[in-house]
Image 1: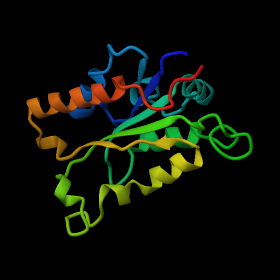
Image 2: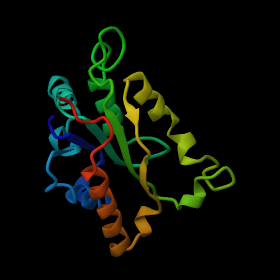
Image 3: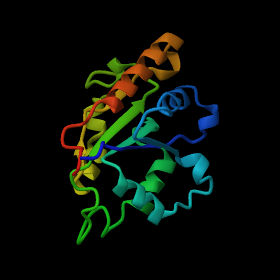
Length: 183
């Protein structure tokens, strides 16, 4: 059996200006079996090497999408990556079973507090409701969706709170996901 491998896709409009996303991604760089890719720095023109990205997806057991929550969705760079990489015949449709059985982990930071993501809160919907399109995409691709790791009110978290969240993130990726190992 081989050890499970994790691919972390970091999607931020400008990671150099990020406090939260950058620190969380940086907390993973020394983890064995974890590959971290910053889409914005690798593909500043957003012309993705779909074949390379697909090969990386094939080589890893868990796929992590790490991003700040933008307008109730993923940042544009991640949406474009999804459009260009998760193609018919690869990720879904006839012959598109390359991702079947792999685990999808969402790691999200939001600007609003957790209470704002309730039926009576400022945003009127729960995060589970707002994440339904990503859940549907995971289902289409045959991915097993894990419970999202969410840092709410990210702009207002203290240094210590952010450090504690980074520790939780590291522990999550250090744990062997059920069914992730392949012979």
